[in-house]
Length: 404
Image 1 (tube, rainbow, N blue to C red):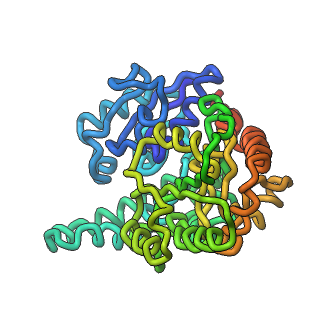
Image 2: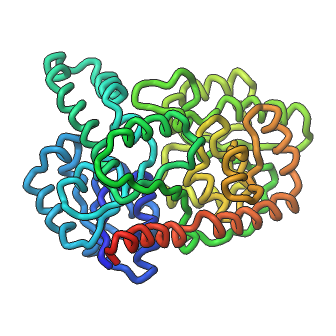
Image 3: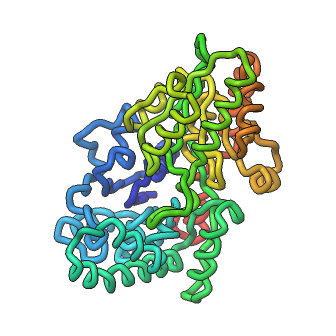
């Protein structure tokens, strides 16, 4: 079977494409972003640039969402190239492309493509907040296009064979938006999938390091102030303030030395620096510039504990990749929703308050505990969140539609 991809938020779709290729299927993949977080060469060592023939780089002509709605000649050529495929898997504004292709497709929703780009009110607020100093007339003229794009995004979700989104209850605002979108009947209702994954074929288990200090690496964005700003959703809020207060309490109640690593990425970097200083953590924090996913894995290998979000978001690729490498994950794993769904207790070191962060750090001071939690973490991800199982579920959708 030949499967085409368009859209690659956080390399999440590319991970699925890799799993499908390993299963023996042919893949054609369009890269549509110049941001390294969304480009495969910044995660996979075997993917170099220029790309091999099955990957097409269209980042240079996709700088604005209007290009998806009004395709240029280059975009039309890329669409013709994907037109050779039996089916498509699309993400972000790739939904707009899928509607023009006449091919059955699955939509991978990853957050803002549902709550912002498919919501005219939120999309307008995000668009105008990023262009406050721009030409007022251009902003006015852009509004009908933004509304039309949001409407077509909604229609694209309704027209899919299936869509992947977080398990029901994890993101109530996203669930409400899906209810509004799917309340308008347009043929058969698409199937809902829950496809969180890590690439366990690419990420090997890494034995625990031998650090003198308890080394904690936070892989989540530094976005934690409320209320949500235009263009962001609850998924973007990571609770970094909770982490810093928890570390402060740990250091006040333990003789173990701890070192925290933070990355300058997110909306609240300056506020995080200030809070760390106010709490007296300046000499306990090492700062890093934004990095590629491949570089991130090196920090995972050298850390004792990895931190994902501590707010009401969802453990995503950062957390699952860390667990896949055998690292204890400190996060709000949302056990009240996921454990009944999966019917197994998660090995995530559960925390959503500063006191819980402090308690978990005390628990993880033992090297034996960290090793045991890390081994259980990899086994858990392998069992429930592998790229291979996600690929199988997509193939089942296509099979039921009579495509493969």
